[in-house]
Length: 466
Image (cartoon, rainbow, N blue to C red; front, side, top):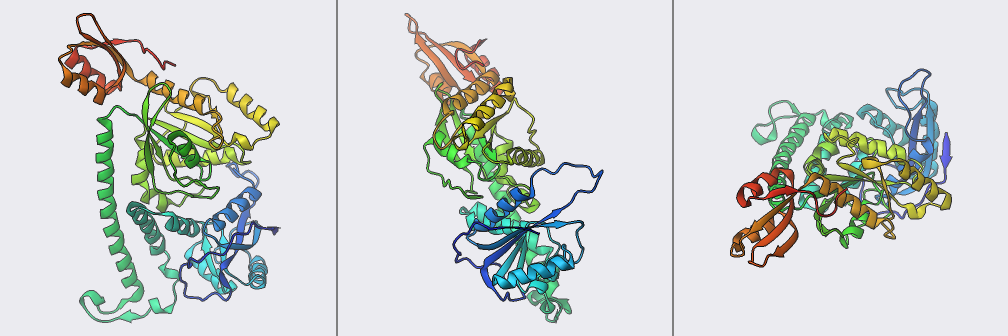
């Protein structure tokens, strides 16, 4: 069992979820465990990250909700035990560690079955949570908007619905009565499942309304000629800092996992004159709970519908390639092709953290990738590389849009106003007779309407060409 002196964070005041076995230790003191199952010879698949990196991330997750990490271990396993996940010797050894540190909580960075969770709690006399449960707790603390709270509650309920089995004898007693009190002989566990199911149905209806509202907002934005650029990336990759740098906003940005959850949209004017809507979304993580992906789908549709996706990577992190692969997995789950370089731009962030050798290596690696695959090294903290990033966005937008030239009667004020609302006016000149010569740029699906209405003709892009 490999141990490490963990990073300490001040004990928080929030309560951990209730359990039927009262822990004997302090509920804010946690022991972090990262099981590492050895890969058998000939087994397919490639391990993406080192156990040490997983341990660092697990400790970071615990610190994200102000838990006091008193011990952290990587545990080598030859196989997963159905009853306790770990072998009996490891269970006993960890139990002594939990008791010695007076910990009331154990975080196992792996998916535990309800039976495994129950057995470990009995063995250690402490509350046991797995990776999914801890991420759900973090999301529960971070959610601020009504939509975010509903999404997290839905994910919590779907997770807890399958875990009623781990509760104790009070769920096995039968209840009599009629109507709202439950049918004859209905057990407490059946009643609890029914209550959870009813709440899930209600939340899903409310989120469906949220989805319709978001669709209406997207439809409204499409009436304005501003493309949407969405930020995605592994949690703590610096998305919110980049968002603040590009928009001069003040979205919460901390060196903390899942610092922001609720999506934020701002209008940005690029140096080329292009106007865009920039969208900051929730960060991704390896083994992101399926309940959260499903619950946050309405929010993540901002990514699905985006014209351009900026994949923000922390190139100073030792597992940056593994993190990029995890983000790609989530994007595929949303129906977005992470290999579509025509739509996706990789942003290699946090170059300010690299030493001189690391910077040289990073810039050389970026230079070897040409065309649409060329990444943009930046520092959202210092602003380095921002001009190149904005230019890359403008080039990508201008290549996909149609440039039109047209002549407009100076008396047609309504038509002129319509063009300013529904297209990007690149040039406007008045002839000697007063006729306005305009050059506008629009998305391909809007070009036909302007051609018919104003007799516009297609021309080469006047600026921002790739």
